[in-house]
Image (cartoon, rainbow, N blue to C red; front, top):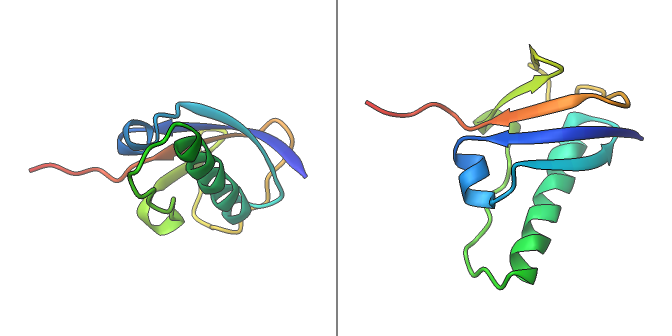
Length: 91
């Protein structure tokens, strides 16, 4: 298991009320599942009634150590920093 720092940006940060987290996972897809569970647990503890949306690799832009990640099953290493950015929108 790799212990990594996760930073959320954009809509993900606003919706989850979470800026950073420490998570242990072997691969990125596992990290996203664990992060979603952590966010759901936090919302339940705070009594939030909103449905927590899944953090999906296909719906996010993900960087690992400053480089764009293109594989959801990317292996993680101790000390990695994962950034999860919401998709751009606007008009």
